Amino acid sequence: MANRQQFSEMVIYIESCNSGSMLEHRPSNVQIYGVSAADPNNPSYGYYIDEKRDACIADQFSAHWLLHCKKSDLTETTFQDQFQYLRSQVKLSTPCQYGNNVRTILQLSARSHFSSFGD
View 1 (cartoon, helix red, strand yellow):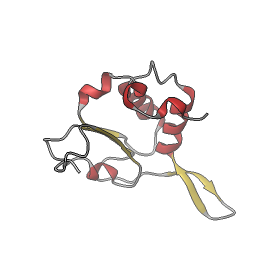
View 2: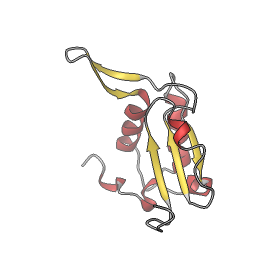
View 3: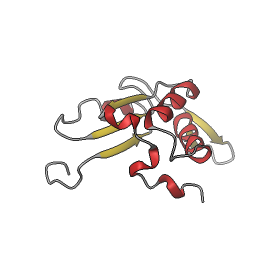
View 4: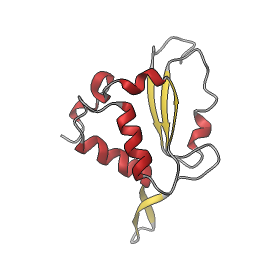
């Protein structure tokens, strides 16, 4: 996608075990800011379990990410604010951030579709 110039910059969140491995070796010539649920060598953990269906509905990272998006003023909250919140709330894995750290000072709503999140 980057080679075909299909985007100029990208923000990506990845929730999976070892999700940091998908971001740690990204090309240096693309403007990507990424947040992973876990570092490259460790799992992410289930948080909401539906015992009747024996299924994990969400892991701890995504549950806190969604909660933060819903309760925060996204015109005031920066990517770094959100990342710090995730690091403080997610106890079972280690959220990591990668890439374009200039993005961390921008508000979440500056270039996102989150402004109608939860409506």
